[in-house]
Every structure is written in structure tokens, then in C-alpha cells.
Length: 566
Ligand code: C2O
Ligand code: CU
Ligand code: CU
Image 1 (cartoon, rainbow, N blue to C red):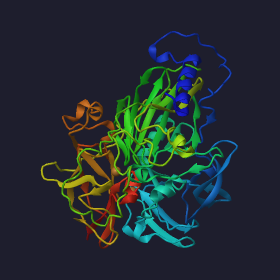
Image 2: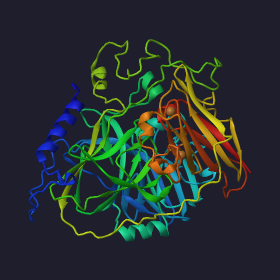
Image 3: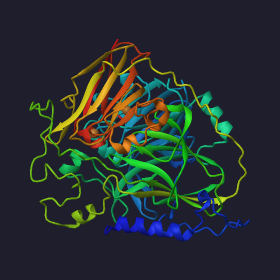
Image 4: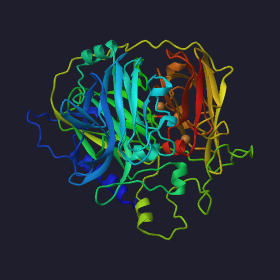
């Protein structure tokens, strides 16, 4: 507990204790007062949460006709009072300037958008989770140079859900996302609008998107992206978690139901999310995953969220008291960075791999992300010691209950109907995740743009066993173009097993595995069995990708082309 970050966490916990009004879920009596106490955000969380508004960062863009997304460097305050250079997609919408807009569209609506690349590197936009043809998918093959444009034109057949968009140029995705590029893409349909009506939910008021990502920020308030060889291999972590680009945020709530749509947009950090009041974990309801609403709300207290995954949750504050404080936290867990066990033994050279990092810290001890390298100790090393390991306890946001409100809506017992894909895990295609010499691989290969190691047939239903090696790291496995269903988890670590729902038989599924998914977390030693239906409405062969969504793993080549043959 010596790092500055840890001190902040410790003092924040103290502040919550002093604030005191955190006792309602313990059923303790408290004196209610009509006038709310004067509001003092605690010093550990002094910044009001940024939410999507009419303009600026994450401003809401309701699609009505063609628009242009211009990737460029803009000035935005991350740390209040310190304007920082940020890469953003700028959209002009009825005289308003939006950066990384929250794009909102009706299901089956159309996108006609021009991407203008105003940064000095090649780039391209990928629409994460959307079913589009390969020309519109942001395949790195279509990346355009600085100054060039790319025209997108596609329909969005997807059901209502929280999707997102981000750059996808090979070797540069991690850097460009980290420096700012990316935004939410919310699709709505009748079922979704009915739910909003039933629960009286309104975007940015009671339906709050929360984009989580960790960043390093220097004394001048600027983003720092400077991965070492080891971080390029394992993943680049930040020293603090921003929520909607807000450092140490608070949110003011009333005594009613809130919806949070949470995206993990971190390059490499995993979270185990929970809402905490004092020392108690509060129950909340998971209502949707990557591909939208699930069948029925699931009451849970904690959930893993790996990079690129989304969850849609309801937090019921009806029984809270004015003055109560709730913390959105990441609970401690085992990061399972077990990559130093025996490597894959096939001994074959890695296809298409760039030179593997060599040298004194090419291989490292299990928990040694912060280990001093051979480089003499300098300011940089000191800064790195402030970076919390994956899996340490973190507080991400405070929710202050500020107002009384009468709220009498009921969460529907049935949210949607997910038709199960008729398939079982008996004879799957195996997708093996492993590494040699710090190079992460899929089926023994790394990315080669002109090769398509995975070929499937249009219209086919396939079952895949995504099998992570024992000596490995957790990998969030993502498939472009198609949402899939998780059928079974095998060989899960204890911390994952504990989250398995009682009512899914012995399949080991957690609430966050239900419904439709485009990204799934696979722990070392674990096999996750998924079913995918490759039906699509496009003409001809389509080339998509599968990859790990740890962006450093992806950039380093933990990605393969997948052809869907017409
Ligand atoms: Cu969000 Cu290919 O990724
Ligand atoms: Cu994607
Ligand atoms: Cu990975």
C-alpha cells in the first residue's frame, strides 16, 4: 500500500465511512430529513461524471442521413483545467460539434458515413458487434492513409443493444484507441423502446452509458502511451480508470431505478464489477449483454467484464436514503497471468510473426508487470510503480443519492426471447490460444493479412471450442460480423465457477454469458464452447476477423482472417 494510487483508494474508503449514510441495505434505521444535506463530493471523487449530451465528447448523434466522421486531434479536458490532446472522431450535427459521438439508430436503419482520416497514421473504422459486409467492417486491409477517406454504407440488421466503434488498422489499434478514438453505437427497436417506457428510462438521465478505460496521465494532464516490449506483448495498463473520460467521477442519483450500460474499452484491463455500499455488495440485475437484452433479468452481485464486452444492468435505489453513497468498484481477483508456465511445445516457427521481443525482460516472473527492467531506475520506472496490477481492488465511481423520488415501476419478468441455436459441443472446431516466445497465437498462427486460415460456409451453424492454454493469460475472444451464443464453460478457474448460475445446469455459464455475445472471456486452462450461425444477407464471399480484444495482443498478431464462403 505504498503507491500514490493505493493511498487514494485507502483514503477514499475512509471518506465513504465518514459520509456514513451507507447503512440502508443493512436495514438500519436512520433519521430521514426533508432537506437533503449540503452536497460535498468526497475529495477522492471530485469530478462530476461526464454523460452524453447535446455536444462535445460523446455527444448524441441521432442518425438522420449521411454524415462525416473526421478523425483528428482535438483539445479536451480530461483532468479539469488541463486541456489535453485527444484523438477523436468529429461529427458536425445541426451546427453542433460532437467528438466520438454516441451514434443512435433504429434497428434496420442505414448508415451512410464518410470517414476522413485526419491523423498522421493509417486508420479505418470498425463497427464492433454490427453485422455488416466485409467492405464496411473496417478490416485492416481497407485502412486508409492520413488525409484519405473511406465511404461506409450499410444497413444495421442488429437487434437493440449497446455496440461500439473504434479504429482497426493493424499494429495501431491499441495506440489509436488509447489516444482517444472510439465511441458508442446504440441500436434501438420496439422491444427496447417498450422497456425504456416501462421503466421510465432516459438516456443520460436514468439510462447511463459508462465507458471504462484505464489511462496514464502526466502532470500536464496529457495522455501517455509508451509501452515497453513487455507491455507490447502483455497489454498496456493505465494508472487510473476513467469513466466516460472522467477521472475519479461521481454521479448524483435519486431514489429510483437506474440503468447502466457498461463498456470495457480498456486496451488490456479486466474488471470484476460490483456496486458496494459500505462493505456490502449490492444486488443488481443484469438485463443485457453484447448483443442486447437477455431472456430474464439475472440478480447478481459481481460480474467480470473483459475488454470490448458490454453489460446492461439495473441498479435499484428505491430503498436508498438521501445521503447514501454507493461505489462502483472492481473487486480483487486473480489476474491469472500464467504465461510463464511451459510454452506451447510444437516448436514450429510462428507464421507471420514479427520478431519476438528478446533481451533481459523478454520472459518475466508471474506477477512482474511492474518489475524493474534492466533500464536504470528513472522517473519512468517510478511512474510505472503507480500502475495497479490487473485484479487489485479499485474504486471506479461514486454514486451519491441526492433526491427523493417516488418510483413505482416494475422490472418485467421477461425481457426478450432468445432463440437458442440448435447445437451442442460434441464435435467442435477447435480454436487454440497459446504463445511461444511472448508471441500470442491462434491455432499456432499470427495475423497475415492475405491469408484466411479459417473458412466457414455461409448459412452454416458451427460450434467452436475456444481453448486457452494453461500457460497463458485471460483472452477476450472476439468474432467480427456475427453474434454467437455461449454454450458451455469447461475447466473454468474457481473465481469464474463461483459466478456460474444455478439454473443453467452444469454448463458453468455466468449471467454475462447469456443471450448474444460478440466477445467472450477465456481464462488460462479454460475452454469456452460457443455456437455461431453464419447466415448473412450479403453477396459473395465475406472476409472477417477473429481476434483477442486485448488490443496489444491483437496488434501483435493474435488475430486471424475468417472467410465466410458464399
Ligand atoms: Cu472491437 Cu476487431 O474489434
Ligand atoms: Cu469487432
Ligand atoms: Cu489475448
